[in-house]
Image (cartoon, rainbow, N blue to C red; front, side, top):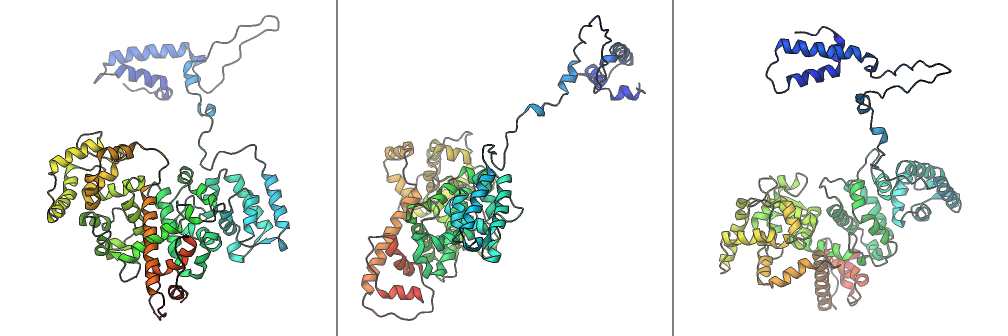
Length: 529
């Protein structure tokens, strides 16, 4: 039977009636359908004044002398169809929560007054520090402010250009994270890429009192900046996207650490991101492996790290592109210094959340997000071969697997996920068991109660990376001191090879460490060449 009336076909109530009629049935008898349709049409005729959605009901007839009762309540469908979004307050503010109490005009007036104290009301990069403090921002925001106001093109920033830029920033961005992203990012971009940090960090190198010794060695500026950028992305870019968003900035401690730079003259006291000692350790480790000093290392070079402690299978996985970006590694089989920074921090601090993700990607050979028993056995086979070569009887894989499952306690038996490893807080032991023989043997010899104590200790202890960097730096300083004393009295000689980090370190270590004695003139003259 066809319904010819267009109004009936479009009536939502009719469609509901027909759906109720046909619910649970493969077909509906025509007689039953006609009966239900006739009953529905009668009801429509009786309630016709009340069934006009979207049009107001006619006002009741009233007389001046006798008030009439109120009209009946509208149909419940009219209430349900009313838009509810108008009653829900806004809760998502991607540019920060607006502060209705802030007085932007008063801030702009102070900025204009500060520019009046500058000659010709034109601020260069150094005078921009005063403007940054007037704006209520940390000192080392001055370089991003300078560039955002067009100072890079002219060499100075005028009062008019800066106030126009800052007014727009205040109106559209309401917290430090969104402002910082806007100042550093490229036009029409809402995230930061690695090259966006270069002007900021170059300003830190040029002006921070703890890095004054780097002025005489500009060849190390880019290497220090590269190290800091990689450490920033290693910690802040939790999405592994290569682009830092304002949300990731808010969840990290980067802006707080950046603000500490103006309060702490010794940059090595700021172990997060900026420590020169940490850069010195990383670059020295890379220099030892990079025998031809072309700032790239091969798979064979990387396998030599820490006396070949890491297995060949895990090194192959790193060079397969599991944790690296770009096509250089896959095509040419070479690792850049930037990728080495990620490797070294991940190798020496396997408790770090990024490190746990780094090694999980390496061990997840098929990329299904689960470490299967096959994948665990694949990596453990090489460990067994190496132990047998050393005369050590390895633990059978079945017994080892029972230990690891008891250690991790996965939510699903036989399937270890990234969440399981982060939750168990023993990921460093798990990873070392399968691809780092030296650390695996160290864990086997340790007291199990001491391991449990380390897990339960939630105090402000330095990270594994901080401890490693401090120990390695002291070792490097001692070696350089002994070498300098041994070479004392010898004459300098000419060389065309660029200065190694160990040679350069002798010059900078006078400031970095009070325990390092005065160096001879030989190594310093090499740096000056």
